[in-house]
Length: 425
Image: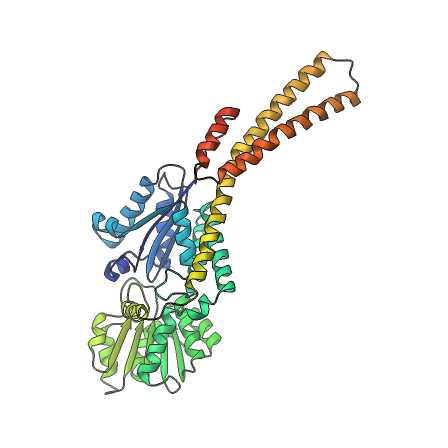
């Protein structure tokens, strides 16, 4: 089975297009189901974050039908001309797809290099695909392998501590802009992974007063209890803005939920009191015109990206890249060995069936043999079979890891006439 990756990220795709094709968690099941229904797609996982939308699929045939199906779906979602989207997308297959996912999992491809939020996002994507029944041993195994590589990189290097998450970068910016957070009132709108992270970081930063809001009352109460905050319902947020210094949004909604008119109404009651709005949503949660209101500073993911682009690159990156490179080789070798398993099993079965048939004929021609003699002749024949199969089995495993492994396996398959179907990676 060939692993295929079709991805669009902040590196190649304008934010205004990326925010239109991003897949909110509420729509993930539908997108996964539609892709899994494509005949060419045997397994599939969709990874959608604030700065990337990537599909990892497994196919037994050529990759073109897979890439075409993914491009068609994403183009339709974002109302983007298919030609434009194809020009922005990056397609990787085989080892290149594996290497890319391992790099993503280690935080090497993140806007905030080294951030570890991507780990939770990969876990969530894999879990959603598993619950939808769209993964199996190949793509599901790939997700597990990526998480293991990420754990190794973060254990053996300091990539996580030298990196910085988008949420932390935004909060650091708010801290500097507001002259400290100790006496400030912050509101976090959204209790998903990003919202929870922002709330924890605010509490760790010593924010004076913290409120958390969600469309789900239970979600707000749960997070508020965890970070010692006041729970709010999302509809109550506009009314709190007059008393707030910092608003962080991460709702996962497909349309803005913080409107300029709401913020303007709140601003009229507080005069020149500054309000810092950090929009971590993708698509954005806050109307862009909010940033033009007097006393309001609006920072979104695009602005954070520009800020982080100027940061110094962590020294640990070369070490992490070396870990990724070694793990890719090891993973592909294991995958290729697994691809050889059907042939090896078929070869063993084929030879043993021949041996059993010959033993039956021999014992039929020699009816005078007693049970001990029958057992000894059978043991001798099977001992010869094991010795005969040993070298072809070892060589099949070795050859499967060669770049031309599929060619060698096909030659062995023809030589032994096993009839085992070919497997590719």
